Length: 349
Ligand code: NAP
Image (tube, rainbow, N blue to C red; front, side, top):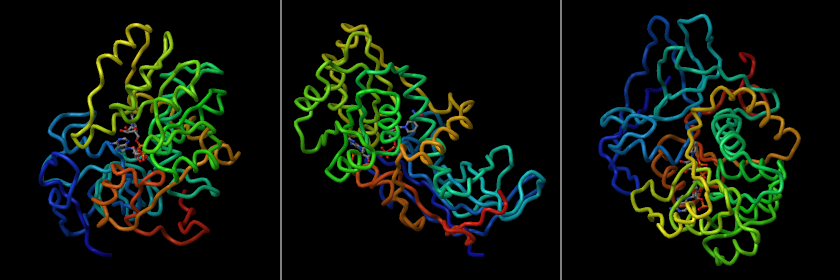
């Protein structure tokens, strides 16, 4: 066993995250006490919201305490256990933090049941919070009707790409907005989304008018700022904006929303509704089954962008804000065990 490596936040960033905001500590691997398990982290999800957790201002989490291990959404494997319900070899999801090892009470962990034909990393990505966010945000918050026009921002991203494809499956006219030719081509070719706008190269307003000629009934907003203004400007009567996130503002330099555009929400009796995926945990299992089914049936595509090594944490988070992530950004903290084609054992699940 190697020592534990822990990434601790020591300074709150005001803009983009850099190495100086963290201290890397090498500590002893913790020992589980009564009613605890020792978990070896395998995957760390690099979510844009991690940047918000670093601020002093509370989010849906309390602010990340300075000097402590950075909060992180992880998938790991139980290495030793003092509880009957979890055994060595079991895979668990949890808030295991930006570190290699942690001990936890089983109540704070979720045992992962890995299907034999699915890569393990999907259980901390598509068949997990991203799938749940996309599915419940679109269907439960947006309440889409067949034939409506849906515009999705960060459309090639983790949540956005799933929203586009679920929207298409429901029978919506989907318009995806993404940055750069690679992402746009992937949405068109792989995900079958015909109406895609490259906001970095195209005339966004003109393309929106062309691809949503009857206006926008529904928007799934991940970005905010001027792009959101252009979408709101085109909202139809009783249009809905599903506010999932405002990633353009997380590094502290985001554009503000135009009051002129927001007046359209009033004039069109439209609605902007924020939501949190944590409100939909009661749907976790059934949405996971739907997403697994979509992948098996071939209509739901995904891209996972895996970087090896926790020492790439700052760069991985930066990639998400530079739009360089090609799909869901994950760090592989440690290799999976050998045992099947995906390289991890399934015997314990
Ligand atoms: P992601 O879309 O995989 O990655 C973020 C993408 O946002 C980047 O690839 C980039 O795409 C775009 N972006 C980043 N900075 C930007 C900027 N300054 N201006 C314009 N675009 C920018 O990330 P994700 O995990 O799926 O998250 C997407 C959104 O969902 C975020 O706002 C996140 O906070 C939110 N979220 C909310 C919930 C919830 O419960 N409400 C749950 C999960 C995620 P381009 O290259 O295309 O610009």
